[in-house]
Structures are given as C-alpha cells and as structure tokens.
Amino acid sequence: MARRTIVSMPGDGIGKTVLDEAIRVLEAAGFEADYVHADIGWEFWIREGNALPDRTIALLQEHKIGLFGAITSKPKKQAAEEISPELRDKGFVYASPIVKLRQHFNLDVSIRPCRSFAGNPLNFVRRGGDGIDEPAVDAVIFRQNTEGLYGGVEWTNPPANVRDALETHPRMSLFKEVPSEDLAISTRIFSRGACRRIVREAFAYAKKFGYKSVTVCEKPNVIRETSGMMTAEAHAASKDFPDIALWETNIDAQMMWLTKNPEDYGVLVCGNMFGDIVSDGFAGLIGGLGFACSANIGKEVAVFEPTHGSAPKYQELSPSIVNPIAMMMSACMMLDHIGESEKADRVREAIAKVVSEGKVRTYDMLRLTGSQDVLQNGAVNTQQMADAVISKL
Ligand code: NAI
Ligand code: MG
Image (cartoon, rainbow, N blue to C red; front, top):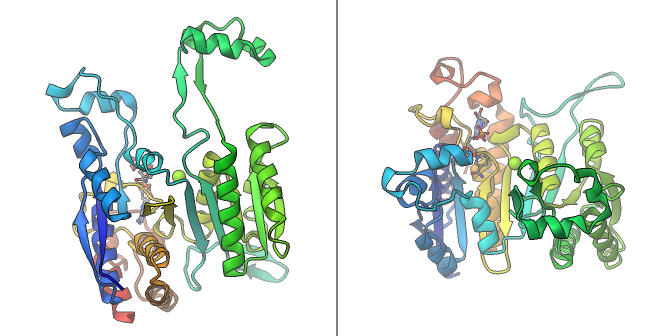
C-alpha cells in the first residue's frame, strides 16, 4: 500500500498532548505514514482572525485524511476581546473551526462508537436481581454532522424579511407582541439527502458489523417536520435491510432508557443536536471523555477526533495527566477507514489489555480530581499510558 500522508491538527490545550501520543502508538503498531502539521485553533483566531486558516483547508483537500486533537472555543464577546488589537473591530467573527471543517468538506456522517472495555472501573453498573450488573455496552451513534441546530442559520433581532416570512406561519402568533430585538431564532433545517445518507450509512454499518438493530432517535411527535423526515428516511432505508430491526425512540425517553438497558442498543442514528446528546450519554456509560472517540466522514475527506475538548485547566500541567485513549481510539477509526483494520484491531486489543490488567490508570479511571497530585496517588501520566499500550503491541 502506498505510504499515506496524514494531516495532523493538534489544535489547543490537551489536543496537542494526546495527538502526539496517539501517533506514537500508531507507529508502534507498524502504521507507516508521513504526518504534515496543520494549524487550527485559538492562537490562529488571535493572530489571524481565523481559527481555521485556508492553508489547513488546502492540506486536507490535498491529503484527504486528518487527525484532530481538540480546540478551544469561547463565546462571541470573549472572542472579540482576545483577538489581537490590530484585528479588532475589523469584522472578524469567531466560528468554531471544527464545525467549519465539517461544513466545508461536508463531513456529514459522524460516527461515535461507545464500547466498554472489560475491567474499566468507569463502566456503567446497575443493581441487578442478585447484586451488581455490569452490562457490556456496544452502541455506535451515527450523528448527522452538518445540518440542524448546528447549521448556523440563526439570528438575534432577525431582519424584517426573515420576520415577515416567519409571520406567514400561524404558530408565530405566539410571538406576535415580541419586539424583534428580543427574538432569538436558531433554525433546525434538515435536508432529505442528508437524512437519507446518515440513515443508510447507519444501516450499512449495522449490516457490516452484525448489529441486530438500528434505532432512529428523534422526536417526530413534536418536531414533526425535521424529526419526521429523518424517521421517514429511516423507514425507507430499513426496507433494504430486512435482517436489521428498526427501532424508534424519542430523544428524551432515550436518555432515560440509556441507563436502564444500554446493552440492548446497537446502532443509533440521529440529527446533529440529538446525536451530540445521545453520544455523550452513551460515552458516559463506557468511561466518559477519556474514552469517547469519533469520526467525521465525508465523501472525499475524513477527520478523526476524540469528542473531548481542549481541557484548558489541564493544559499547563507537566507532565500531562489526561487520558490519551479517546484519541488513540479515534486514530484506530482512521486506520479502519483507510483499510488498515488489522493494525487498528491490534491497537484496540492492546488498550483492552492495559485496561483489564488494571495496573496502569490515568486519573479519570481512578476517579481522582485532576491535578498534578494524582501522579502521587497512583495515576499514570499521559505518556505512561501510551507507553503501556505500546508495550502490549
Ligand atoms: P473538555 O472536554 O475540554 O473538558 C471537560 C472535562 O473533561 C475536563 O476538565 C476534564 O475533567 C475532562 N476531560 C476531557 N478530556 C479528558 C481526557 N482526555 N482525559 C481525562 N479527562 C478529560 O470540555 P470543556 O471544559 O467544556 O471545554 C473546554 C474547551 O474545549 C472549550 O473551549 C470548548 O469550547 C472546547 N471544546 C472543543 C471540542 C473540540 O475540539 N471538538 C469539544 C468540546 C469542547
Ligand atoms: Mg458534544
């Protein structure tokens, strides 16, 4: 196989630490690639007024595959205050670079597997018939990644033509007396093509990996149009996958059931916001942010990232204490995507061994409060966790 070039986007804070460690693990697994660094994140907002510089987009366009650590995002006001003085009030508006990346390359399929590792002390447990049950969770969330509430079509104080158009809907009567400057509107726009693609990808994945069910998790009883479209497309897709059951849940009930019978769920598929919520919910059952991995997949470009952020409160700690497993698992998803599943499986098995042996644990796995002291209280640092995985390879 031709040697690959991977675009490495460490970003901010702990993104930098975990990405380096994941690359070390990939190399130890025998994955040979060239890594080209690409700029992304807060420092580029401050310096250039753009957290996702064009040169980074060009590198991804060229090489197609990206590994991303995490970025720091801050609210509008703070972003405007922190931008360098010479760029201030020049019309730069902060936008999350990862959201921009997903939209620019139409990385519309987000996959977030949540599988428990045996022996992880953070695994979900529940009271069973005669003692404590620890159900093995193996849920894979397919999240539509570009549209819906993250589409960015929103206003505070909507312009008159927008307001006029909305007023044509009878239900706007509820807001008739509200002055426009007191109206905030965030739209939830779904397109049929994107709904169709995400549900089909979900079914195809379920078939490929032997899952018995696909659950479409929306709320069509209330959010009739958008959730209704996603659910209808799920029904249409299910006709081509007769061996896989289609289940329907509402997002609110799903969050309640999550801790009742998580082992019953296989593949789940949702719009953008609900996918974000459900995937965090399931991630909480398998160890939380230190374990939650994800893929953003488009037709041409794909970017792999842990779901956690830049954890600014830990970024100054040296050595770093955060758990690199989520980043390593995301790197494994990259290997799967480029046809290197054998190496991905070896890395996952190595992680599984380290977790089940229980000798090497980062602070989160010991339920310690994060600080440098954790290293005196039995936790390993980020690099030591990676070393442990490498030793199993
Ligand atoms: P966060 O995910 O950075 O951290 C939340 C907490 O989770 C941390 O304080 C830490 O206790 C724990 N944590 C996170 N990653 C961990 C790891 N690998 N190992 C062990 N513990 C870990 O989320 P937060 O604090 O809400 O946001 C911090 C910054 O990150 C913000 O600027 C936010 O906008 C950004 N963010 C970026 C994301 C991305 O790059 N995709 C996703 C989420 C947040
Ligand atoms: Mg999230």
